[in-house]
Length: 261
Image 1: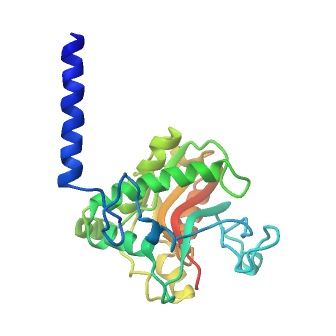
Image 2 (image 1 turned 90 degrees about the vertical axis):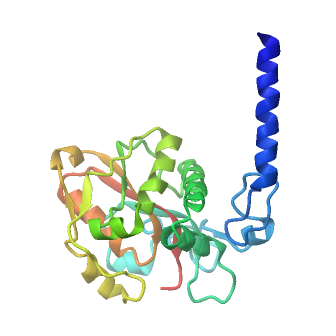
Image 3 (image 1 turned 90 degrees about the horizontal axis):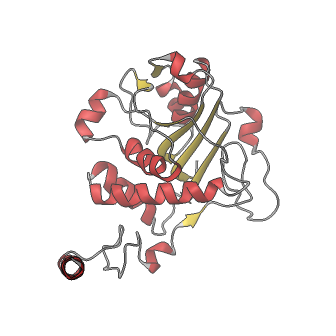
């Protein structure tokens, strides 16, 4: 019996080695071969700017100064968001001329339908959400449900998957909290937010979400998950809808956020 198990272990090890040779692990951005299951090579990893203090404790926007304590940003003072707090792992600029490996990887996942990138990005989402839970700057409580930002049915059919749901599944496994992809739905198709102004983004998603069963939201601590926080209009409208249906608290976690709006 022991000899048989040892033989199976050797066979499994040989198979894994063969797969590594035939299908080497590659950087999500530049496709350079990697020696392990890392997401990015050292060069690309160096271009990724992680979010850290000082930042706004409401929307999670990092301050360019890089020094001083956390404090509420002018935008959140003027117009406090519906959600309690929002955090992201990394930030990038859409107007910068420097390489943006995380942005390119997310685009490849969403629009190139690269599911291997999605799997790796889900792992990054889970890992860095867990890190955020252990810091004063991040969400740090037990949640009743993890809620992915929903796609409208027409967009879901075109893309074939909801990228926010895949990222939320990563967090679900990491914190052992169930994902509920049905609690919140998008009731109408909306324009892509990419080329809209901040105010147009808010108008675009206003009234676009609905809670199917309010009793399942009432009194619950909810974690809303999306891939990128740009202006915050989408997660703001989702949170507002959840609070209108009795949610106790709504926090937001995204893999990335844009910092040049």
